Amino acid sequence: MATTPLLRPVIIIDDEPDDLFLLRRLLEKGGVKNPVITFLDSEDVRTFFVATTVIQKKLPEFTPCVLFTDLKMPKIDGFELLDWLRKQKDFDDLKIIVMSNSDVPADVDRAQKLGANHYLLKYPDPSQLTELIAAANAGDTAES
Image (tube, rainbow, N blue to C red; front, side):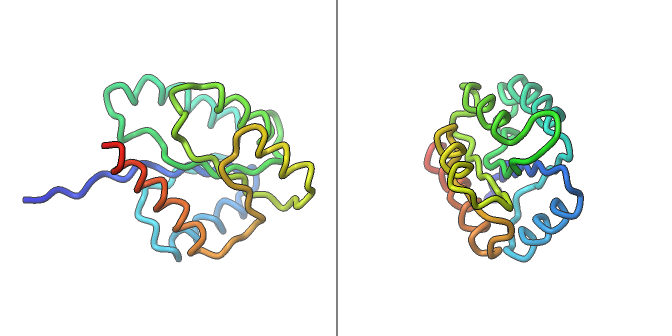
């Protein structure tokens, strides 16, 4: 009997509950099958990634494939989170997608320089999100 490969989680971080809800709905509309884990607090998501470095040694399928992050958040903003994650070698293959209301060129440029794979304005078409996640999933099967 063929087994279905496990899809790695998609992480969403946004300090606005309504934005988290809308993004989750867009993923559902796009038919995304990956588990989705949401965070309202950037410190919590950083703690999650620290724990994931330990867990992924035993369960690599637990390692997230995509992170959607807002930029403007209290405590640790999206730029700081992006900078911190890109310094963690365990997450080199993590696709980081900034999703912001800001279309200020300086924000886009800074996010790209810090290692964002994509910069999207809120709220993109569900098919665009599905394509980005599918590409991350395809990268998993290519490396397996």
